[in-house]
Length: 122
Image 1 (cartoon, rainbow, N blue to C red):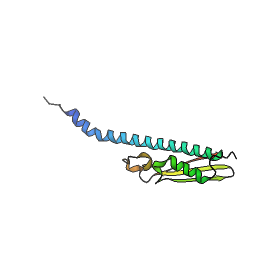
Image 2 (cartoon, helix red, strand yellow):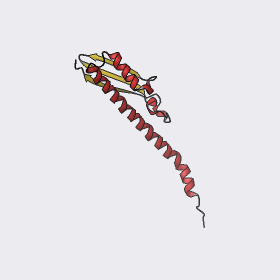
Image 3 (cartoon, helix red, strand yellow):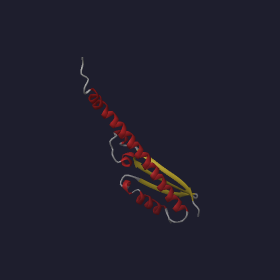
Image 4 (cartoon, rainbow, N blue to C red):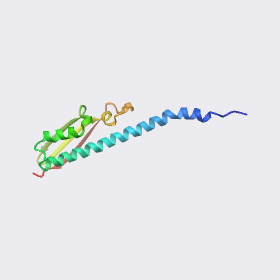
């Protein structure tokens, strides 16, 4: 007769790190995609404001974007230009800045470029 009391505890201790890693991976990935969606929305709003004449130049547009994405200010680059009536804005930001936790080392050193274009109305 064998005593199997505590067998579930041993299995839980063995599987817990794997499940924890999967939860962190899903959480950080979701935060990265959510951050990208938020940044895209800010860029699109800024481009529309520039296209409609609310902003007078590209510098105003870039300042607005930096003000909206204040948590990323130190690590992101913003570039806005107007060529032939097309306003093009691009930001580049490290994924580690977007996730916040920095638990997954594979995200370190990876950058994301987010861009949008808008026709000028003026």
